[in-house]
Image: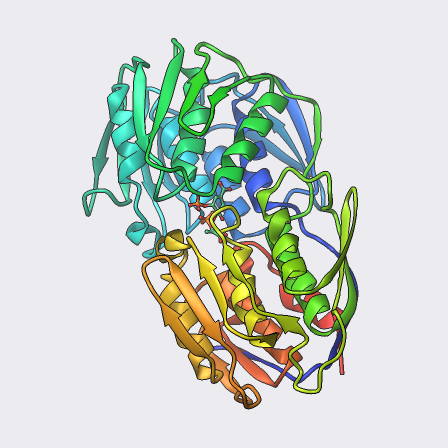
Length: 433
Ligand SMILES: O=C(O)C1=C[C@@H](OP(=O)(O)O)[C@@H](O)[C@H](O)C1
Ligand SMILES: C=C(OP(=O)(O)O)C(=O)O
């Protein structure tokens, strides 16, 4: 097992240029691949999740050319992949697995989709059920409702489709991106409350960028026109990743600041930008421009807890919400993070993993199906704690913040490659002893 020892750093200040957004990168890659025309994508995130999408698209016959370090040229297939039989390995990338399942179900081909063992524990039954309603033929190769999957050629007849909204919004996003390729219009009806709603807004915005409009009636009904062709917008610059911004902004709020992130700001279409509202509620000073955000700590306290605890509904920011859990250790009082049930089916069971690791540092943690309640210790955080990361990039990045209070060891730091391969270099560059 490899590890990274982070020494105690008392101050965080500086500037970070953010890597491209994972959620935008994988949407834009897929839509460019399906579109008519050639798309130049700049500031594409280079990471494991985007690598899996790029590899899959190449295997499906899409022409992908790398023209610069972070720039790609994608020649779209005008709605039909030329390769009708493929075996695709999609790692642990939800933003690749779920949308590709939907799109490939409409391609009249024979496809095998698999991932890492954890991906085979992440549910996909709601999406498969929805696709079966329009005629898709999909078989589970191991366990019912979970990957790996086999997709068979099928005649698709769009109609009213009912989909559950309470496990992952990626199922609805996948359907929305796929259904315009079907012959007829479709209406998607969401059963229950849709979680992670800003990611669906992001999907609809990216589709509009490629010329396809979805009609949304509240968060309950989505009307998707059929027989559409996505049209390449020509050039796309991927904005910086708002979830990745959260670690640096939290560092500025905890340890002086100012820390400024460049690449995402007030004009962002990513939901995780609203992480700053939680930080502000904790007392942080936030400044924002159209494409930058800066955070600073509210002041100094002798006990090192410069922030105040919050009670926060995190449903709209499921990824950045994890950052609040470790930030809570630098806050006075008990922080409650609510509406986070989806954490249980992500890279790991994040409620259990987070509770376990926070307790190692001396925190009192109470958890339930969909909440976490964190009280920092009265004593200093336990020094030189060894943090397990569960092959979860966000666990590694969240716990780097502990070094702002005490030295910490992060096991398996390379797991950050899922979305942010050079995270620790960038974190080290803004932290000072
Ligand atoms: O659509 C997306 O890009 C994402 C949606 C969210 O997942 P859920 O909808 O499963 O919460 C988020 O956690 C994930 O990292 C990215
Ligand atoms: C949940 C995440 O990823 P995925 O896109 O694989 O769902 C995440 O990045 O935190």
